[in-house]
Amino acid sequence: MSRAFVNEDNAAAQADQPVERQVSAQPNYVTSQGLNLLQGKVAELQTLHAEQSAKGEQADKQRLADLERDLRYFKQRLGSAQVVPAATSTDKVQIGSWVIYADEHATERRVQLVGEDQADAAHGLINWGSPLGRALLGARLNDEVLWQRPAGDQLIEVIRIEPT
Image (cartoon, rainbow, N blue to C red; front, side, top):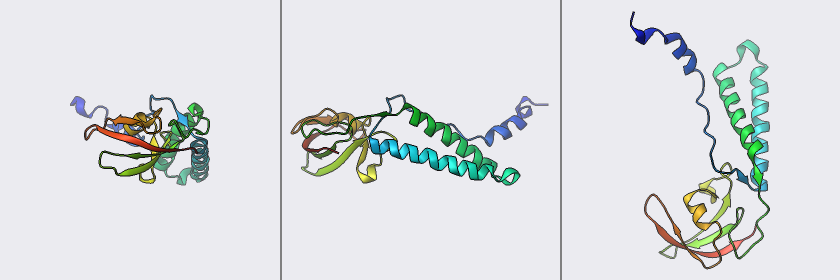
């Protein structure tokens, strides 16, 4: 018998296990709103898990495994969360600050620096550890900073800083 077929049963069993979610190595700084989102996500997943578990033999085993994986991830994220004080400065960019910046073409954009689990670029919520977040974090009003992007570096100017 070929060695290729020896672990076929083990491979089939492992295929049903979801791939673990990778946990970031950067500190888990969160805004108070980000902490509330994490708490809500854990509560939601616990409810879904309890509902699926209550089905007993009729439970969707794959769904249950996915929920357990997500619960492990979000509980870990919640446990490692470090809530930052509310951003109050209008002179220096902090996590939680809303920042209006202008690019080299004088196009203005408004973003808020948030924790990685709260980030949602479509809504202007930028991970503080992203290239844009790192460029802005600690910048002062009217500073020009270098945004190191995969598409090429770009100078941006901090036009306004709004507290949360």
